[in-house]
Length: 250
Image (cartoon, rainbow, N blue to C red; front, side, top):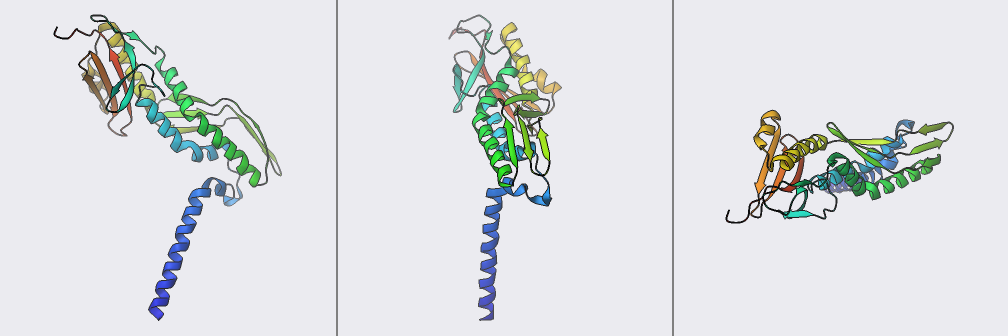
């Protein structure tokens, strides 16, 4: 009977631990407001709310040539890969489709994350109110900036909270570690070779950037798929081109 009682107690404790873990995971952002009696900043709250979604948005856009919903694309390995340099003629070099690739990629990531950004900001306001704060928010349009080794999401908003004292936050941003900035820069260099000479020499980049893998996969109709991969963190940027193509049989 004593052993059965011990087993029963063990099972009860295990169930309690599992329930607590689920509750903490679900209410974590709200719980943070009460830890140590300290006020959580808007940036800290938003970081925990949106970080995972932001990483997923960056990955999706990067795998599609910097585009959220490519319109002119090559279908390769179940992915729609945007043409970033293209001509439908033979013997001619391609025309750049996105001359400002970095800015274009930033805009596309902003589109991909905009809905979740709004949701997180609404959750932020409710969390402050539940903690007894008066909240005043001046909302702006979120924007993405690709920077060396990281991506920053700026909410372009001002948050003012008040309980005993008033606190005003104007620099509401979150950042994730991602080197898409470097990959887009290398992609731009390759595209310049494609538009000028109709091709590029990928080994030059791998000799200079030891942690970089550059794949150039030629297609039967003259297109090419470029896949840039960071060997350390496996981040990728891939895109398609069609330049200086030759007719079949030539």
